[in-house]
Length: 210
Image (cartoon, rainbow, N blue to C red; front, side):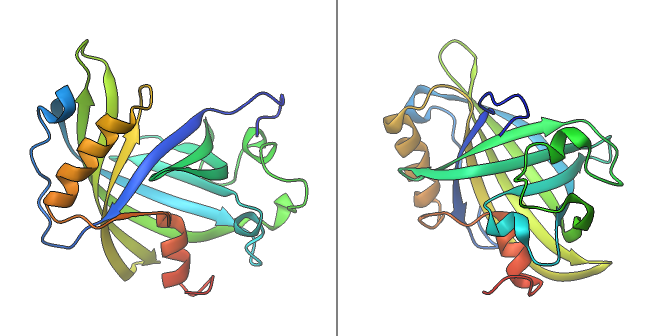
């Protein structure tokens, strides 16, 4: 998915839907991991596609996202597969201004898409509570994000939902991941789901079938 033809970095994450009254459990000590709370951050994301949803049809996602109102980053995702409960996607971050996708991002998408027709199609505001899970050596093995998400249409909130993501940063370890998921399930999280925030937003906005 890179312009040079080399493999893009892989994002590996598990998504679990949770209710509004969900309380993130204490994850310290689960499977030998140490929990480090990074606090709450606000993410503002604008997703781009054509009116015909060509990127979605071809399996891509493209967004510009800021964190706590700082300078943002463009991200292109694609080639999604499943590995057990985890979604695995190629993910490339690119610097650029918010007004239009930079050339480096456009080079990562299919030539079937007319880049001149790309425009903003969905807007999300996420309040994200982040807890890092550190291994025995103190390296980050996973990031747990408790997300309260608002889907926007201008200033209007179309819908809200909440989910927990476990994004693996270190080497995959099925037993360790299962232990973390079990702790979240015991606290009230649902079974892992495969639907991205972006697709949930497009459904709420009526841009793709529910």
